[in-house]
Length: 122
Image (tube, rainbow, N blue to C red; front, top):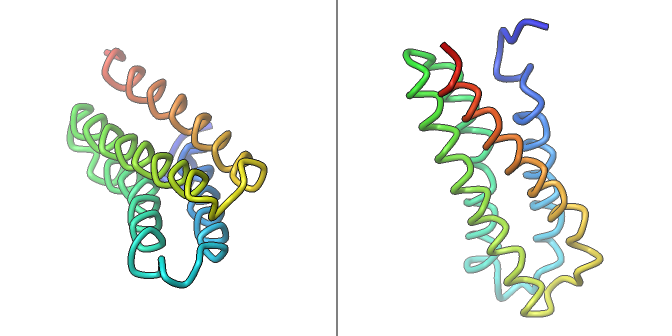
């Protein structure tokens, strides 16, 4: 299958799913966190698919796309950190977050693999 749009990339699709899950999980946080952790975790999650889309759309050089994938991975790891913090603060249980944590791991591997293929493909 030819990739014609960022929407064709499975990593973008899964990243969008992850963002939805983060928004759903953040509704379980106490209201005192609305302008703190809730804001931080959603602001970290949204750039993951956004940077994949932007990098693919620019497409001027393979290094450009790889750079945006690197930024997406950084945002992904930031999201994971905030999610783990929510567990430590007892805002979520590990069971509630497990599916999202697994998805984050999968997306991380996909971003690493895609970046490697882009940079090492002639």
